[in-house]
Length: 490
Image 1 (spheres, helix red, strand yellow):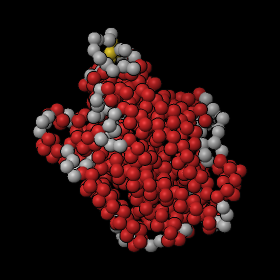
Image 2 (image 1 turned 45 degrees about the vertical axis):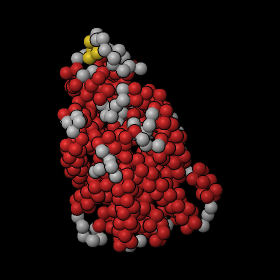
Image 3 (image 1 turned 30 degrees about the vertical axis):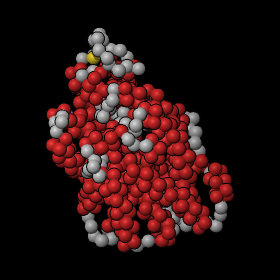
Image 4 (image 1 turned 90 degrees about the vertical axis):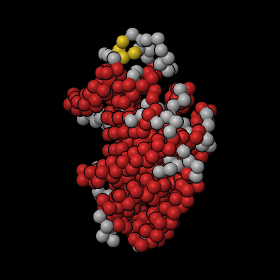
C-alpha cells in the first residue's frame, strides 16, 4: 500500500463528504446548525451515532488493547446498555420537556447562572480534550504511513485535516453531521469486517475455527473477579454505565444529535437501537483485536509497544493493497467522525451557553450566523493547538487516557445533573464553580489513598462515579431551602 494510493483514497472519500455537506447545507440556517430543524429521521441518527460512538478510539485502540486487557472491555460495553437506558428514561424526557437546544441550559434553570456556566465550561474542556485525543490517534497513523513520506510536518497535517472538517461542518452543522455520520459508520464497520475476512483467508482457516481458537485463548477472558484490579467486572460495568450517562447523556455533542429528532418518542427509539447495536459491534472489534494478535504471531511480528499501531501496521504492511485500502477508508471515516460533531457541539455551547449570542442577537439571524461561523473557526484553532500539545506528552494507550481524563472532567457534570434531577434542594449558586473545580482534585487524592490503604488496589474508570459522588456531596454543603419554581426534577 503506497502513500500515493492512500492519499488518493483520502481525496475521493473527502470529495463525497463535501457532496453530502453541500446537499444538506442548502438553505441551512442557525436552527439547522444547532438542532437540524428537529427533522432528523431517528433511524438515520441511530445508525450514524454508531460511528460517532466508536470514532478513532474504538477503531484503532480497542483491537490493540486486547493484547493487555483481553475481552474485559466487553463488560464496559454491557454497562453502556444500562447507561443508555438511563439516558432514554431519565434525561431525554427532561430535555424535550424543556425544549432545550443546549442541555446545559437546564443547569441555569435549576440552579442559576454560575451553575450554567460551570457545566458549560466543563463540557468545553472535556470535549476539546476528548476530540483532540481521538483526532491525534488517527492523524498520527496517517502521518506515519502517508505524510511523513512526503516530508510534511505533523502540525501541517493537523491544520489541513481540521480545516477540511471545519469547512464541511461550517454551514449545515448538525444537519450535515447526521448524514455524514452514516457514511462514517458504514465504512468503519465494513473495514473491520472485511479485515477479519482477509486475515482469516491469509491464515488459511475459516471463521468458525478462528472463533473457536480465540474463545479458547487467554484473549477471550471477560471476567476479572479480583476486586483490587482496575479490570474488576463490577467496576467495569458501573464505569461503562456512568461513562455513557456522562459522555452521552450529559454531553452536548451526543445529545445534539438526539435533540435533532422530531420528538421524544423518536429520540428514545434512536437511543434504544443504538445501545443494542453497539454490543455486537464492539464484540466484532474485540474479535478483530484477537485475530490481529494471532496473525502477528503467525508472522513472527513483535507486537511489543505497538498497541494503537497494531491494526495499521498489519493492514498497511502485511495485508496487501486490498487490506491497506480497506483500512485507509475506515481510518479516514474514523478521523472525520472523531471531530466533526465535536466541533459543531463546541461551537453550539460557546455560542449559546458561554457568550449567549442567541439572546443577544434574537431575531437577527444573519448577524448570529456570522458570529457563529467565527466561533466555529476559533474552536477549530483550539482543537489544533491541543492535538499538537498532546503529541508532545502522549505515552500510553489512548483509550485509557480518554476514559481516565473523562472521569475527572465529566464527574462534576454527573454530580450537578444528578443533584438537580434527584433532589428538590436549591443551592448557593455562586459556590458551584468551587465545588466543581475541587471535586477532581479530591477524587484524585482519594484514588491515591485507596491504593495506599488497600495495597495493590487499582483505581480504574470508576473514578468518574467517585468524582460525581464527591460533587453531589459538595452540593449538599451549599444547599438552601427550595424556592417556588419549576426546577425540572424527576
